[in-house]
Length: 179
Image: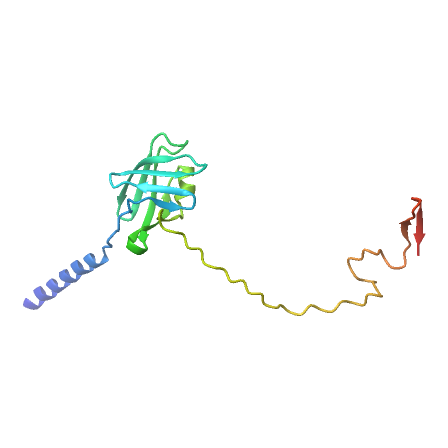
């Protein structure tokens, strides 16, 4: 009997430990302004967000998270944007300031174009563009040119087909045939 109770206790502790271990700690979306290309977004801790970009309509609304899913809700935005957009997000980088979004569901085309697949960094962070090193490597040696004297069978031949007369203009504008 004691053996069964001990085994049951071990099993329960194992299940509880694995459940705690399996839970992920979700880092919240930073409240500092974030930049993605020409866009700047801010997720206020009070639950409001703004997203602006030159030449694009401003998107303002509310946001909330449920685990690693963020729901963006707007009213009065561009057509079709009154519903909720759902995105999976992940936070990474130094001080957990970089945010990436992946579409779950969103009927708002403008919001979906901007947010889906985007990676946001702090607006104050300088963007580092790696230096490109272009190295020229020689390719295979080109075949030698065919005999220039015999142009039969070569293509393209801008000299016409060998053996046929070609019209040539004279200075007087008349055509003469050359053989």
